[in-house]
Length: 297
Image (cartoon, rainbow, N blue to C red; front, side, top):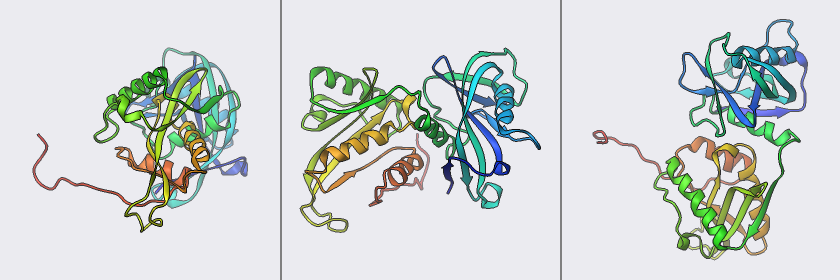
């Protein structure tokens, strides 16, 4: 298991790496290594005697070709994993950069840079870098405020939810998911996350009384079942899902003792980290499968 933690500061001598979450003209900047088919955030090792800011500036130039940019430190991060430095906690400095101009050619092992709105689906370091990006978004003060609110099911809201659920279905990120129809949404309490008037995430669900759930709660307990929680790809790992969940939890706590949900996501490691570590939920049950005969046609 990989553990990622964040600190305001540590002894400078402990800082061995610099990672630079980068944007240009409002779009994310990622790197494609020559020997890999995945994407990663710019960054690398600190050279002996090098100032950590100098490391960040050098790595950003070498890996992206950035020549005109602003850069700022965000916080210290650490990684603890059995595969990393014999399980020791290692430290690096996390930076944010906004690039105005790039050189045409790169001078490192990076094959090319990728500029896009969405976060990668194939990360080089999936258990580390998405959480670094999330922490940068949380800590930076220049982020456009996101408004979370409960709304009624108007025709406009219905159209937004159906459109977003069609995008979700097209991602093929959850087993068996299909886009919503009106009847899937009616009767639910609806919460939206909006940024400058644009809906970037939603959560909806409804109250029920527990039956045959005595292993985790008294029979007849009032629960709020989260039917769906969705955030657009470009704003994932930035705290939007957590904000929706916490807002909904506060809104329903007078009528519900528990909040419950099920998940069929294919990226189970990320979703378990989100629900168990970030939202402090408790694991209840799971259904697993393994094909043991033949191959799929």
